[in-house]
Length: 252
Length: 252
Image (tube, rainbow over all chains, first blue to last red):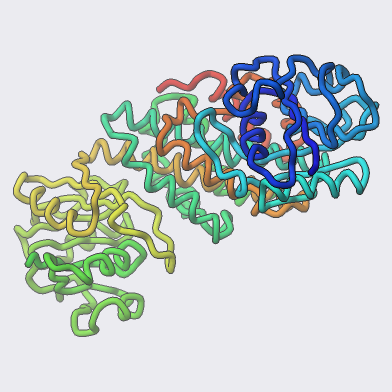
């Protein structure tokens, strides 16, 4: 059994604890939770410690705390030369205290409290300072996910920016759609099949080839009518910026 | 049986023909196709006519041609006082020739050639000049879709703009994500579960509540790092515009 301890009690920590809980290869030794209530249903109370200083021996420590707290938490650990990884998409591996062997165990997904996710479907982006540690991360990762990737810190940075576009900015597009519906007495439900199909399309078709709409077909009349419809300056600006980008055939 | 004829041979026309083909309530009388090849597999050749002028009697004529051709095609019809509808999201009902009774039969979905869609899941937005015609459209619509909505021309205009945001602009976000992956040696596959989950979230949660990410949590450090990463001026502008809009808590 590989001994794993988790530091954190937020969304990612909770999903990891749940994923490791029923696992033949992994022994979830301890969870360090500043807020023990939030993990008390997932793990026996005897395994919860309050401070990083209180953690016992494990083969792997996973720091699943907010980005800004990773460096500090890694310093608070009172042991050295053990494998300590964080779960952040945007923090460099080197941000952790070098007294331990460092790595990254980044699940690329948007976690919502209370909404279950199929962890086996989530891509895990792994990185480690040395090859043996990478092998261990890979071994641990495979017990909970079918999608394991070796991703360097530089690639992870790019990936995090890409994730902001395909997830955060996409959700903002949904939000604007919802607002336009609300303002015109249209149920947002009417847009849901379109949202699903738009996402489903790019599972098999490159987004470059899936692009449709007035900007793609350079339909100046429709674009002008839409801009006239959008009274709000901010929405006008977004519409214009994205239309221009599609029309230009955006290249990096 | 309600007699329906379809004018057009593009994506929407093809999907409508397929949806009506096996239908106990609808008799698909004729299809008027400028390009007969594209519908020859869907309907017997004897039912295909080349010109709107050649169409025989039906209870409902559905004009499924490009937006710019709707008015002209409606003028070419040589009969009057019959029910003639178009399938466009952005053309007013009144754009058709007033010699016939007018209406709209707008399936709100993004159609891709060769990719089957479950027509029963597609919202149909209906409008008609008079109540009896609306009832007929409703009756016809229900034979192919479970989601029938009465949508006025003004609402349809708003809906079409909303659809551009949640579908065309969203696909552009996917495209940018793909380009960032390509430029950094990352397989685009790694983003797919995130794309699926982001769409899936808003099936049950309002997009306003589903918003996450650096802009939402006003994480200035991450935003600055992302802007530094994005060398391309166009991508920088998109990132800034959308981040600002999320931060402002966009209101119409």
